[in-house]
Image (tube, rainbow over all chains, first blue to last red; front, side, top):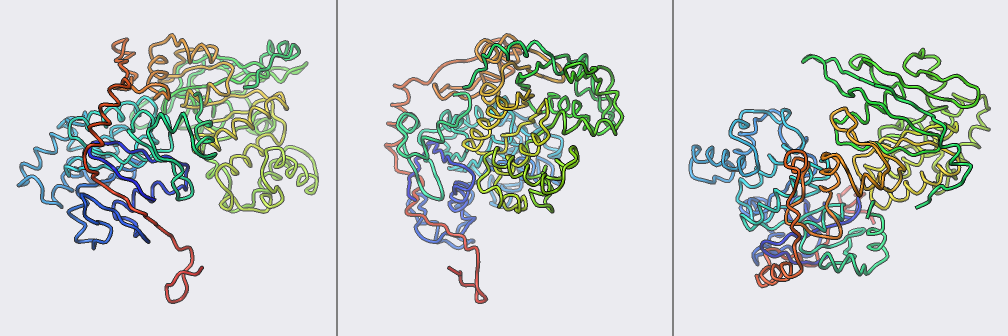
Length: 229
Length: 345
């Protein structure tokens, strides 16, 4: 498995459950040990680093998960949840400037300063996903790994979260590794996409090429199965 | 897509199977009354597939559960309304809301059955799949176990489960999600119901599996003259299977009509938003439409990213050095390890 990801690019990873797309994302973020090969970040091999040496890299490559319900600590207020990663990585000078940054981030993702004192259960799924995005942005990342980020959301909420991701990319020049089983979402979001099956790459290319000229039986079936084409 | 144009069928279509009149369901909570379904009325003809579309909290599942009389009461309470079931022929109409629990049991599963989104949680994990289907058959029909088993195996064959005998002996965790949903469908059609209520039956499944399940439901519908109520948040799926659809929003029906018309010319602003906010395979927008764009402003930003813009974006993107390079990456999981912790091949 080999591919490159460019600054400001959205790279889509598509495939069915069990195809290895989540594992690939986790392997890049150093959350799963790798067996062979390498991951180069800014031309340095990061896959061989120890956990401690990887820490400064981790802040550049945060993950946002599918389930906004289980990825926020229910006993932490939203303000604390967004503050925590900045404290761990000692970002933005002192505590006061960090707190200002929290308010900033909430506003960036369409929430307000009043939300800092509330707990996760007081928010809807879409709002929680915005909070998770704000938490990832707190690290001033270069590359965000979005693992099925809108799959648990209603279609109308899905659209607002996808719009937010596009805006943030424009604003901060972020790259996304966008993992999704939904090909129509991938088509809208991604500059290039890779279809995976059983841990292997089936096809990689520009979305319009993959859709117009599927190279394997598997990719063709996957495209044919999209409901309401 | 299969279309039913048989004249005999059209005559049957005039015949109502289910009628819901002014149904209002409230939930009594600590914070007072919560109206989940707010005075809705609709009907379903024999042989018809009715789609119910809506987002979470719109009341679509509550409506379905009330038809099965599966709502927990309390906290739920049916504040008003009627659910009339027409068994057909000379038989009297039944108001499902007035039935005793004992009578209900003979109707639930036998006349109306239901499949759910989560096949993992709808099957009992401690019983073999075969046992669960024969149990359903023997509950409603006086047959011996061996006959029930034969029927279950025939049903497994019919829902296209590979190796029915193996699945019969398998526990739910030993088969895939799609196979579990097929077992659920086998169970649901085991007593030849008149109405099948499918509540998001394909939402938890992969798209290719989803397509196979939709194909199966379509086939069964033809074969068994089944009427269906198909609930989904996904307009694309509804468009694949339903003849007619109702759109629910905050407990009310905001639009009702032919599926094609709802998908192509939605009238209500909410439906327009719901249709427009789905990413399309045919165009890439600067910004996806949202429901508030339609409900509050009545218009949205429909600018399409042109090929020239895509080209120039690519030129700048790929002129840079890559930020991340993945080279011949291999990740392996070892299922089994020996005493020394070395993988067993």
